Image 1 (cartoon, helix red, strand yellow):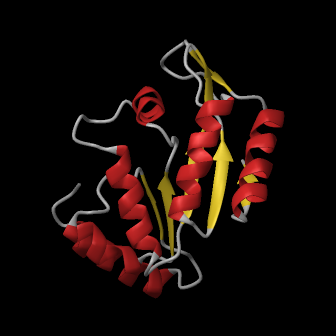
Image 2 (cartoon, helix red, strand yellow):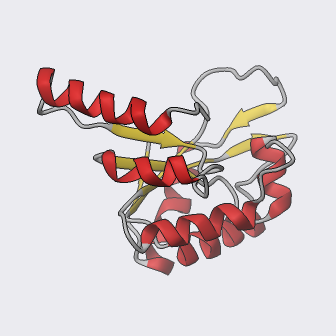
Length: 163
């Protein structure tokens, strides 16, 4: 995280207001630093917050995200819950298949349970579009993504859209 994240965000907002007042300032983040005071202070400055949550179980989180060892899934979920008490946000969730898949029934059930706890404003569900650096990672078929999104909405009431 840049040490002047809030100042940079404030300046971005000022420039946007001056040169493109109709444009929206959007944060896309892996949500791993929501507990950071500089990040917390800057979050209200964004028009939209799109935050990643690709898993509901630690093993899925580590397999899909390959996070720094200091990043903890439960901490991210708790930070998202806290954020939701004061600001709306959208979750963005990547599903993959191949050597490892977070689109299995068990992985999806755990993810839905996590989303139910977090209660985002909406969810964006997607898979990879281009060949990734790791050849063993494959996209999830669009029909399966639609099933996941529909199941999420049916079980939680949270609107989900497939990208």
